[in-house]
Image (cartoon, rainbow, N blue to C red; front, side, top):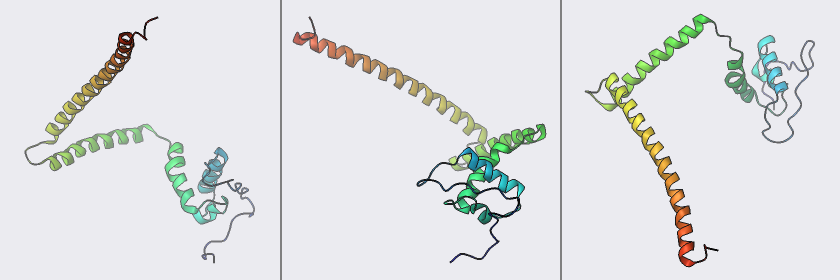
Length: 159
């Protein structure tokens, strides 16, 4: 039994045609699906349940998540003021992040000290990774050379 709710808008004057039902489980959204979803959400005053009626086989929740996480971010217009506010927020977050981390490390470790040590550890880890990659290349070459030497010792590697 259907839940009571707002009336269906499919087929009403001024409303677009519904999207075709996906052929199979979990098909990706097409560009046309995305365009229809944005159009319905931003130009029609209808609920997610009503919007879902334009997308057979897709739930209102799926459409809402798609719109909020994938589509809305693409259409956001940034002006200079918003960009500056974003920069400020990132800077504030970075400062707060290290204060939070220092509180987890324990008393006597300032946010600045934790940040400096983390950068030092990160640099060491990167050097170790680079060294491990280089050692891996050397090991691979030694294995190839070793195989050739073993073949030569058996007399089968020479012609």
